[in-house]
Image 1: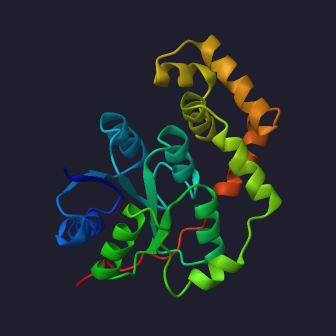
Image 2: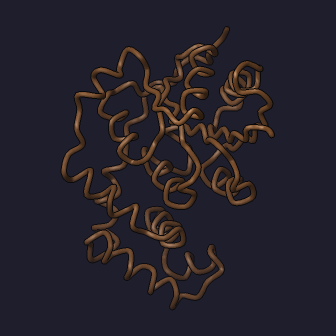
Length: 226
């Protein structure tokens, strides 16, 4: 049976490099790779193939921001492991990614051998971090505020999280209803439940809370070779 891996990154050349890293033979055996260029495409791919084993998720997708994409995947597909991929090498960001449910974190500057090793490690149910950052990450602890937000987000249902994503995009109830093919009354019920779960009173406060998930985009790293 093939290992099913989804690569979610908006740069086609980097997706190609990742495909080479995971499908080039070795300990993984047969690998079936699916690609997505956005968070929406990734979520759709997982809905179509819920037996996916691993998602390689770019920290900065065009329709997401920071750790929002990770939180969305963990909320809607909690059984699928997620390995974060980013040029951002700040230990605190890595710590937050782990706290929000990532199984590992690998840098875009890693060569193909390290990328393959990271994938193999996570698929073996072990945590992977860049060797040069692992000790620093281990010393960090999430703040009480970060832990509280992670807990609140994990308490949302998949549909509530979809509504929350659209709220974060500035969509009104009618627009959310049209997008999700549900009634406005249902949207209002979801919004009320979301606000209660997050401990906020309105969309503005929800937006402020979600900005905790934002991570500044690091300069793009070169495509890995060899």
